[in-house]
Image (cartoon, rainbow, N blue to C red):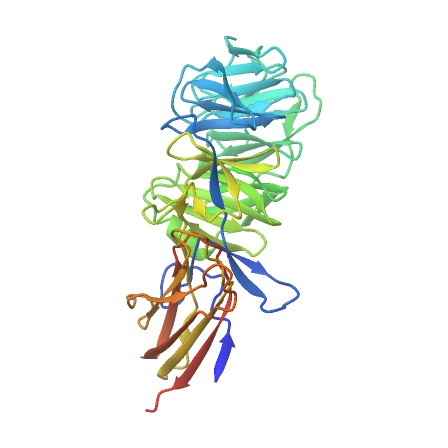
Length: 472
């Protein structure tokens, strides 16, 4: 008898493969509330289509979208680019490396690079370094709210400064985070409030219209949670999310919804992240994928990328190609109804493309490891495993014209794996292809790994097994 079983779940291998060895590589889950064929299916993550390669072999440092143009800093130059890919140089910075932060008041873009500040006035196309003696050179982050630009004071200071125009800065127009002397890591604006992220605390400030200084802390809102990686922070699903650190110590990924903080990293992912040699250089961005709010976090030193889906509360690992451990995306921005992605290694800009199955021409590997198949220590003979793919997805020529799925199995909790066994997914139009492996042998505890490396659409809706108990 063949039984349809929930072989694939949304878990993640962490501290022990004996507990779970589940893995999802470049796959995200969809839960069907109608429960038609299955309630849980898996889809390939989006690919990357090249939009512009005009920026050479170093990455974009930061960007901001205004109307029909995307403004970005590459090396020591501010550029704007239109949707046809035509870019224009607008001005020169005094630095050529490191992240920049940008904000906009409706007419002026403010830029800080950790050394100096700059303004670009869109109407007159005027670029200028901020020369005010009171500007806190060393500012790394900025924002705009209620008629005021704001920047952190740089270094280990807990202070931030404000300005009405970005050019003139008053030495008295500053305030200091009050809850703890933990150094201001980032100034951030969300939902009409200023969020001051320190190394171990987060404060929320609102505009009360006071004459001397308009912003004051919101009483009772301070959280004893700090920002562990400055550039991991971004807006996400009606809140903000980033790599945080509590006063207890370890780092976790948390989402702030109003004044409430919710941990979204699982214990398994917490274990993985806290075993990285470094995490303060983590970067993050978010986007919407077919109604799924997605947050991607990259760990450059570890060379790994993870994707969180708020709809399913699931984490999947991301890789670009067979020889890389991380995803190519470093920055993301929604501009002219498309999600644009900046490469972490070079100056390429991509379009995030759900119907593209390569990252700039490199095939995206997909892999899923299922749950333990275990029946009270009794030995089981697996006569047949059938995985329900969307079949007939082959392309017209080249790699992917005869797409294959590769099965490996483990009988020792995922410590070692069998040789790969291949099965057809179906050439173009062969929609009735069955993806089946037979006579897999006998074992007490089975794990199954399915892998696809062809540049084709990958959809997995479930699995069926023909299993019988071995005669003792």
